[in-house]
Length: 101
Image (cartoon, rainbow, N blue to C red; front, side, top):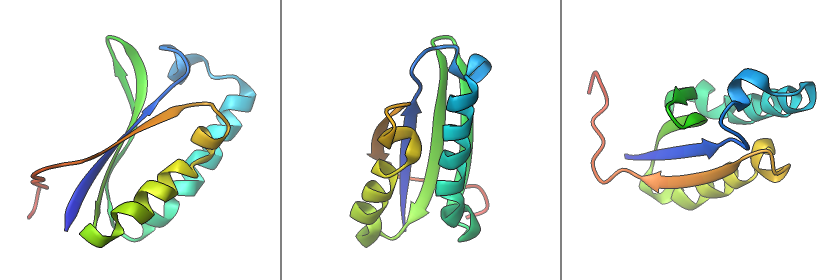
């Protein structure tokens, strides 16, 4: 089992606080897009982060090593990415320790 980390970079630092109605609709589609990973129990943590540099999204997913390309393709098909609302950074943890394991 591998652990993958995705960082969704918003279009501006205040995005989580002042998204337009159109952006909120896109983000609702973004949430629905990731629902299969949540339903499958693969989503370790998922949600918006507010930091000193502004807001961004964090996703941590556990998946089989062989599923890395599939996960990468799925992430690139995220409506937040395909609409240009956000950009994505994709990484694989070299070692992942998840609580309860």
